[in-house]
Length: 445
Ligand code: DOR
Image (tube, rainbow, N blue to C red):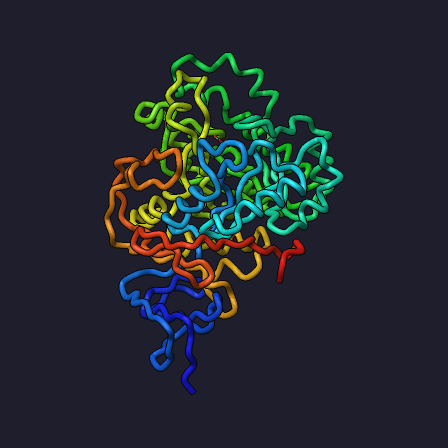
């Protein structure tokens, strides 16, 4: 019997949980319907992928898309265009918007805004605060909820939990894994005088290793005490990697492409405040230790922490400059270049960007290429050489710290639930992103 599918992607090298191999992938009704040699199968359309690698869709579990309230920097439409242009099929977006995303109403508002405007699938974190602890069980279960996010140190926006009783109350209440920005606010406050006017290289001196380590230790101690799952975002120090390596039971670990790629003092000399992030980019020893965390399995996921700010907001004199840089569009090409340079395998990259998010966040039907799963695919050309440029950037702020950087390895196609939303740089309308579904939330099955 000849089966007819909607689409067959032929002859690509599929990189998946079972290794790498040349396979055809058949798609029907937005899901993967068959994998293998499908010579006799028929499909409404066929894409020839010989010579290309097909990865499970890349899930970026940390982006700031700024809507509502900060749309001069980014919005859900422009941010999701940047995502699919860079090969990302789903994003988890952060709650430091204006107003803050801290209630069921604000979450529902974001989900409503995302419909028909986001090109990739999406989920939104809800900010944990002093005032919404009692609501957490309900907030974790709403459609489109990526769970709870807590800022332990202040960064962009007003979300902050800087006292241990509130932090403990939030952790004790959790049922899903929650995500944390771990920098110790008291230490940050006590060291503000270390910021040197006009010198962003003093950013990591102010927000030092100890500030990150104190907060990460406090967080993990509370997680272990209450036996709750926590996700420590954007690890920037070797000290935290070493600590977390001994505390993997309840804590999962995210690192970012910028902490793996940029290095102090070079980044501050070249990019000034455009390299300013929280937590900061640090020196070569910390960068090497984070790579070590990737090699030995301590790191669970890669997130871009895409945090756009306008050039005007970056062009003040430090410290009157905003912390954050774009990253959702450059995550895949920057990491493919690292793969080509031999720093990690393509399979480990897939583990960090697809299997890892599925495992730690309990995502339904995404994160691997398997029959019955959503047909989310990131198609890459491992041999293509390109120079990243500001003109390629879809983000409203229009810049990347990698402007002028040449890479080998490039995203050529993005499929979200079987629809190609990007092919060879062209983004296809309409925007049809849907909420990501989670095992522990009540979203549609
Ligand atoms: O540098 C940062 N910028 N770190 C964060 O945690 C927040 C982000 C932002 O929203 O701009």
